[in-house]
Image (tube, rainbow, N blue to C red; front, side, top):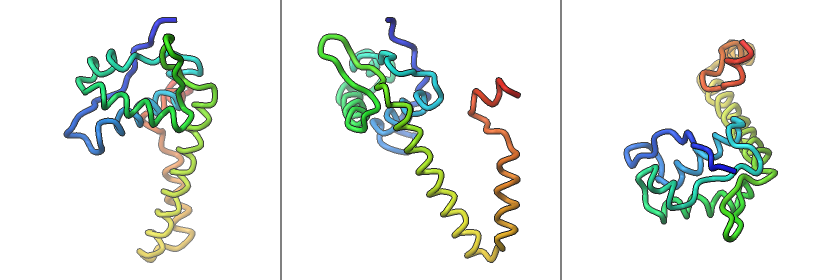
Length: 141
């Protein structure tokens, strides 16, 4: 099975977060967007390091974290692959983060004096807006 070309976006020391964390987040994004499916091979440490212009240690650290989280797995002599439950794990983490962000938004809105009715209207308005990076929504619309 050929290794897919990953769209990891810019990985840069100028971007927020450590380089390895940017790689971790980018791989999770590819998995949750269904561009990397269970069993999909990932590039070798060396290949990805060369492609992203980062050190082997940076890629190794990113892959180790993804493996610890159960999102990818490695097979000696075969390579690194997306785990069967990798998609579920990335989605669960995103759902938890969404809940945390919504709770923080409600808290901030209440501190700013917004009523529950105003907060609900803000949420309804946001839900009406298309998600700019959601490929499936663009295709359906």
